[in-house]
Amino acid sequence: MENSFSLIYELIVNYRDSINIFWTFYVINMILAAIAYKLGFAKELPVLKSVLVYVMLAAGMLILNLFSLVGYPITDSLIVICLVLGIYRYRLHRERKAKQA
Image (tube, rainbow, N blue to C red; front, side, top):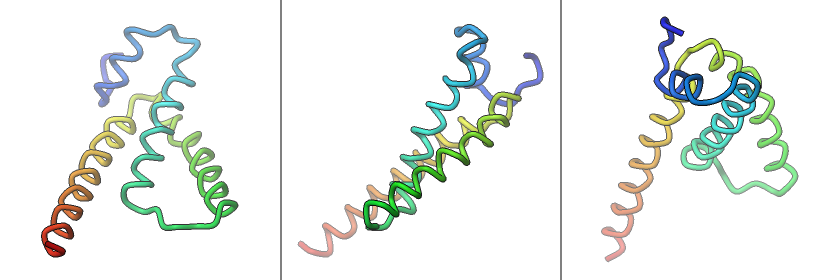
């Protein structure tokens, strides 16, 4: 597709068959969304509440997956979000460690 905004979309469409594109994007987006949730927003919850949160996350990824299939940079955005939150958590960990020492 010539008018896609997403680099990941171009890579997957060029190297995968069209039957599995939906599920490929869904798995990638779900993994990245779960990482982003865990890095930035997760709190200690009881098991059933955690399961409910991840079920709702999976349902929301079905909707976002449609945007990803059109060519919008959903997957690219999730990668950037995970990187930024990972850097933030690393720096926060280093700062807390320096205060304790």
